[in-house]
Length: 427
Image (cartoon, rainbow, N blue to C red; front, top):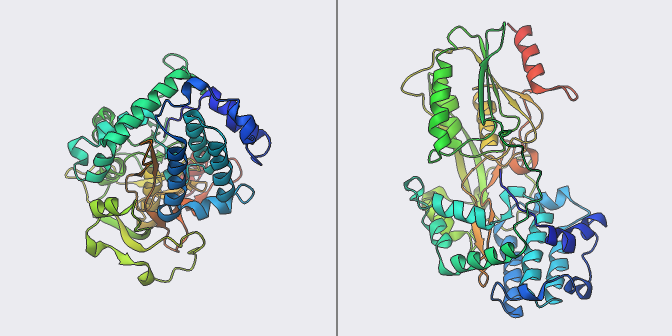
């Protein structure tokens, strides 16, 4: 999950008045101007013309490149994106301040929501991306690396850090007690049952230290399941990570034959997106949007910028060493299942690898390419979003509709209870 630092000053100055008023209007420019610290007026090194140019570029590029805005506006009809953009542009225009500019960009994205992984890249995340994209694992992501290492971006994040340091770096999230952080992976044999249980709260990438450790733990656990009839994999609190994790560590050791499924994902071949498309896809993989097969649940509203589609396969080959477990697999899901964990849910349902149990998932798991960047030309700040707009088999938006479990949990019943009852009833 993304770690978002929401600073007290920004909340007090812009977001809280708006949210308490039902997101009707932001403070008038003359009132908002009094909120800004004169010492931070030029910390990003921007002129007023450059601030407005960056903000207009953000709005225009989202319109031509980001395909989730229609989904976002359908789910928020009383707070449409067009009104949000106008409010915060007016705020920038009414205050000659870099602090106001950053607050406007941050607040815009906060109110738009994280549909399709949309969010501003903050300094801590920027450093993590910088390290990740310089690794051999991601050597084919040339444009991602080019943007992250460009001089304007590097200078922009040095300046942004100065701005955030001036706030004291206050993190308003609830701190955890020392030692209270739960393990990402839990494995156990349910007492008195021939049932194994795995709970995974995130899917670390293969270049992260946790991946190797959890691989060893999972493979060792599978060796204990030979006498089990069922295996429950709980991803109800898992909001994503790396597809490689579930493919190599959850599916490959438990199958005898290759499994695969196919969906479609839409793309907008805009100026911003084109270098990323060139990095990720061979020309023959791109198909004109006019050739997209007729899909009954496809909602065209908000997709005017889509120019192409690609086939989005999910395929897993059996591992070299097969686990001794040959029973049924049940995967517990819920609304927090998103991104790479959503792609696992899609794979389970469409291939029959496992029975999905729980409630509707969060979505955005089809065509799970790394989020791409929108680079503001003057400040160098980055905004990330998903370039691929994944479609379910019926054409509905993966982001909007998610995946419906094979077995829905009634009311507020925990998915684990639903799964255990189904296991006992079908034993």
